[in-house]
Length: 72
Image 1 (cartoon, rainbow, N blue to C red):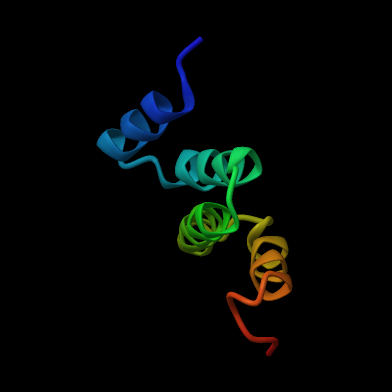
Image 2 (cartoon, rainbow, N blue to C red):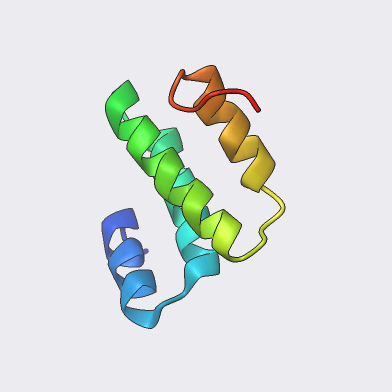
């Protein structure tokens, strides 16, 4: 199985924003530190917004919960 970093690189090379949203969300789940988790969640959220992915509101809610975004 291809590791997560390789999958992210391939998705970036292919311009596959749908895959990037999913892969960055997975990276956030695997992150060891809050700063890394917030970075990956932010990337997942941006790509989810760009593709109108259904997980976008949940990703934003996680960022709000972490104090990395403000409630609307």
